[in-house]
Image (cartoon, rainbow, N blue to C red):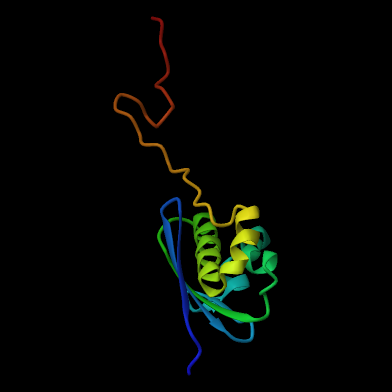
Length: 130
């Protein structure tokens, strides 16, 4: 039987990541580029890689992620959630570890909409008494 593929979808802000996990050597690709190259800032690559580190699966699984939308920070969070969900599919026993670190929880924070009569979501035009 061929290597089984485990899928996970992650979302964060307006980013969506489709993640595939394949048992292998530990190669990590995001949009066809190595994870550390795609997420150039170290904090972002650590964020995206966290589910693998927590479950100690870092060198045992290949990660292929396709990310779309949003900015680089939202994409890192989306990849992390996608990896966590795919790991849960890979082995249900890992769910407890991932849950304990809150890696299976989708971050609900979104950009607040701009309101009419003001320049932004919270900002007001300058008040003039006279």
